[in-house]
Image 1 (tube, rainbow, N blue to C red):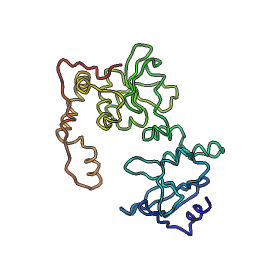
Image 2: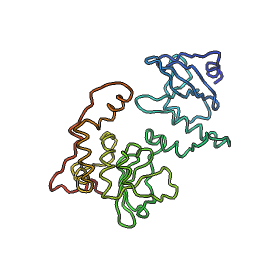
Image 3: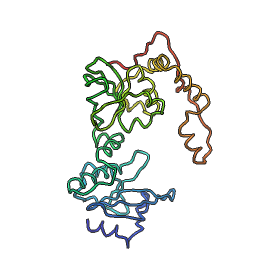
Image 4: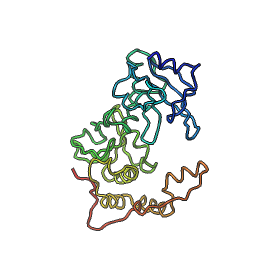
Length: 287
């Protein structure tokens, strides 16, 4: 580890890591781990990253599997956001755990539970999938079906059914959809959940399916029945959604680029138009 530590010393920066970028700043945060600033060669933009020595004793082997090896600086692993996710959350979790075990303070306002909840959405194989909530606004959970990581269909001791959406997945919901959630009274469950009664679940489920690829779903969804449920129980939402889609106002990526001064043509997708189908019903998920 001494060689890697000398490579990260201030007098040896900037440190060129080839296609992974150039380390311009580095601060040790635990043995063999640096909180760094990485300049990307393709854009010239800087971003936060963790640089980890491959023999850092306090970092688990499981966490080391998510780092990218630096061919121009063997012995170092790089954790930075890319198209597949943000493995910085994995090292941040291991750092928080190290601080807790050594009775060191965590950053103000941050908790290891919240960090794990965010990381679990991208890396369930490391953090474990989101647990099914035991307590709901309708009593204790008696049956459940996992729709996707952090998204589950519940039945409770009161015979009620509904949808549970974990933090931070519910950040993908519109304000209108989140407004349909019922007070959870979750008793401090972690992660936090939003709960939607059966009649209201079609709206959040429809929105979440639009950002979830089919290969990440754990059960079949009858999309025709789902659209029927939105139409039957929330016809105003269905009408407003279809008008916005036809006006190309549901193109979230395009609208985001517009706010950054990048003018692209907004797109409409016929697959996102809500329609009603006779004789299908509104039961989109079966136990």
